[in-house]
Amino acid sequence: MQARYEVRHGRLMRRLGIILAVWLAAAGGMMPAPLISPAVAQEPSMPAPASVPPDMMGIVIRDPWFDFDTNPAFPGQSNKTFQDRMGAVLAQMGVRWVRLDFRIAAPLDADPRLPPDFIEREIARNDYFINEVAPRYGFKVLGLLSFDLIQGTDAHVLNTGPFTETSIYGGGVNRYMDEWLTRALMIADRYGERVAAYQVLNEQNRLPQYLPGGPAGDGIEPVIVARMVTKLYRFCRGIPPLPRPERYGCATAAIILGGLHPRGATDGWSDQTILTDADYLKQIYASEPFQGFRDANSRWPIDGIGYHPYPEEIRLSPNDALVDRGLNRMRAALVEAGDPNVPFWITEIGYNVGFDVDGPRGPMPPQTEAGQAAFLHDVYVSLAARGDVARIFWFKYEDFPPADGPNAQRWGLVRIPFRAPQPGENCPGGACYAVDGEPERWRPAYLIYREIAGLPVYRQHFPIMAR
Image 1 (cartoon, rainbow, N blue to C red):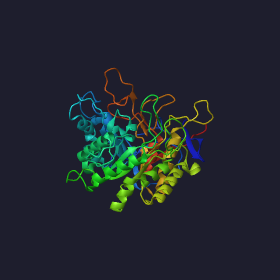
Image 2 (spheres, rainbow, N blue to C red):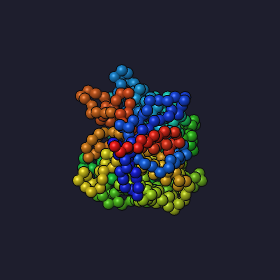
Image 3 (cartoon, helix red, strand yellow):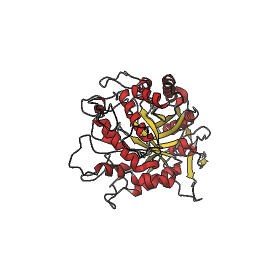
Image 4 (cartoon, rainbow, N blue to C red):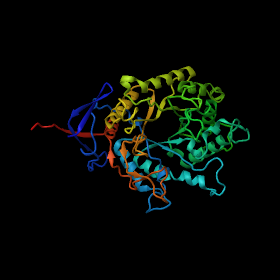
């Protein structure tokens, strides 16, 4: 028999039962084959189903950039089969918003032998999903403009000069910022209103380690981030002076401050926090770029605050209030800064079912699929009730490598088969996924997401009969 889990006071308690979940098609009155079978999914017992506003339902998808030239039948093209299947699964799940990361594999000092249109071709990897898949299912796209716009360059150089005034973007711009803004506006001009919002940078207050022995956990200076956001906002909104009279493609897109990490910034060499997430946000608002823009335009140069309220250890917020605690801290900072009503965009929050905080021999149990489902339910219902959260993007649609071991990355609501690349194979991201994108596992949290999105789920429970 299978185990059915109930979450109570943050603990998972075993109950007997078997669940058969049959999904009803949302479109065309068609009944598809069951997406989840008793052999695949165990459903945790949840509180009474609760739906949230549909426009809050977002998810971080597998970036289309990774699925270019991965189908041997169509060399040099987007893997349309993979993206079509992903789009269909997301639609069946009730997703309204998707976050994708724009990636450009050209460092700041790119090889001069690269073709002159290389950057444009890198951006075009996203064409099929943005131009065809997203409109087909009515998805709104949040485009992440992260440090991966300039792959292969240590983002720490953003903090260093010289800062020149010869750029078309005005004063206080170094080479990295100038190139980043140029590539960001190329993306905006290519897609126009097909991208509904842009996130500016990602966890810029807690950088990864770029070089062996280099710093990690520090951040980009808040004033630099404020300058980048302000310049992009001014160009998108057509606020003069501008180098050209016509509008840029991001004229109607929401501009979101990149998702801040709740653990804050260190000095790059120790584990001690020297600038909390709230203090980092306050310094952005107190900076000359933000203050100057507000003085001149009677508003702040931002439409939302991206935040990643991962608890240090994933637990349910009704008991530990870790998710809400971070948002309350950030809201207090915004009130103090003079922008009390700007909405939060939760551009990442998730739960890794491959994680065990204290290892296999420790007393704390490993994270489970039942725990993931319970956490997802809690996140959407509790954050929707706050009234100051505009969007919630679950991290993530699919698992990614490594598949196993102590560092397994099992964040997905589905698992798509993947393996290590063989010599000569083109598998961006270090893993070759099933070409057709067909999930091999649908986790219980997938059911919970669909139910929260307000879509029908039919359940039938079969009691265990004693002999």
